[in-house]
Image (cartoon, rainbow, N blue to C red):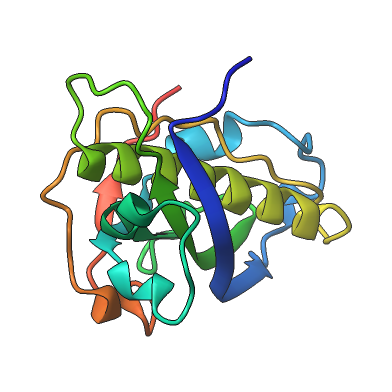
Length: 178
């Protein structure tokens, strides 16, 4: 075990909507099947921006982290126009403030890419657990989203922070094959 290349400073749940699909075909489903949503093409919205102003009025523990502090945001939802969405329709948007540590081993990835990849990975884990927890006692039983990786994401996904403040305005399909 070793210290991570990033540190998570804060997380926020910006939007959450979760409702059962009114279809009796889900009455006898097997809960907690991570492959159930593997066939559903979930819509995503991803962004990552530098957030130097996070440290305004606060002395950072290391001055150089002002330049490696990021706001990362991930939105995930079932397709609005599709009937094949699994037992629940949902939309969830989470954000985080993370710091890429100045003592990390500099390799092939830029600080921007490290912030994006690690930030999205952390946020997806939060989303996955929230959906699992919230559906535990819902009518069609618990849902577990498949495990995903964001290690192939690259900047320039750096975008204005307000791009999806009101939700997922510009969804991008993501292939969730097992």
